Image (tube, rainbow over all chains, first blue to last red; front, side):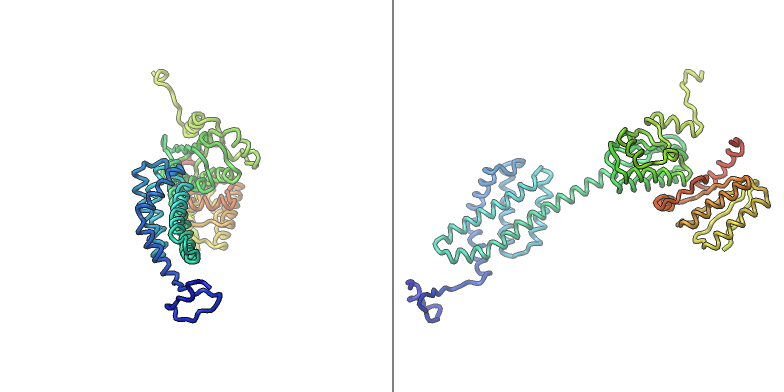
Length: 304
Length: 120
């Protein structure tokens, strides 16, 4: 029998041999206790965490002062999330933090890394505090572990969501950049396509072109794809459809700048080349368009 | 629903309204060819500006109209296909192959004037 048994009066229960009477706390009580400990030792633990971050060579894109400033707010948010279990607020905080640090070049593995380091620093501090009472340590960790896991998860997800938002924004910007429909003469439009065409962009291109044909009353359109390296079968079909739809609006399409790879793709899918009017390069395309429209270009010397 | 057919010199102009039934289309097909015969027209312009959707029956009818009229030695031009309709048509594979098209009535008439001057 342990000493404790024979002297335990507070529980008011009868002690049995071989059974240890222990006063057990509610989980929320444990949480409050460990949060209090983390707050009390805030300065020291935060400092320890920053040292670990530097040692592990994370957040190298940020200065020591910046790391310290962010560490302070992350630490406080971490402890608050443990206390209140308000994970939505934490996720909002994580997205906000990501919005700040992503432009600084901070990577996903760094964010996950520092959160796990903090988790570790705090866990070790709990080990140290409760090392003499193994059973209590277990209960404290039972309260800490799920919450800490959830925090790490929330922050990582928040960070990734922010990155995805930025990527979507950039994709949209690229899409809008690259499809101008330009009028270079009366009734003559040029559509210079640059970069990667996916089915969505191809569709957008077609819609823009058709509207442009109607607005500008174009009779000839030169689609230049010099800047397009490759095209899959779906997109090649879209191109053919664009040519056919333009014809329905009374416009002739000349495609210029086909790379050897794209020429191969078109032949492979069996495009009816009678339907597709193609010329080698943009200059040739414009010259043919001008001929179709009845223009003749002469140098000033000739006209004298 | 009657489709109005107007005469402009040697050209007949038929203006489709939106939502023509299959019966209307059949009626129009015969009607147009009869008018071409009666007036000895050289061309027909079919204006589909008001059509916001073109199904395969309408598209086939237009091709048939053009072929029948060509048998009478006359030209057909389809004008006024809307961008959205054109897009939907090519996705369904309805290309109106072999039929002349133009942006609108003005362009259609210009095309015909040019063609009459330089018959090929």
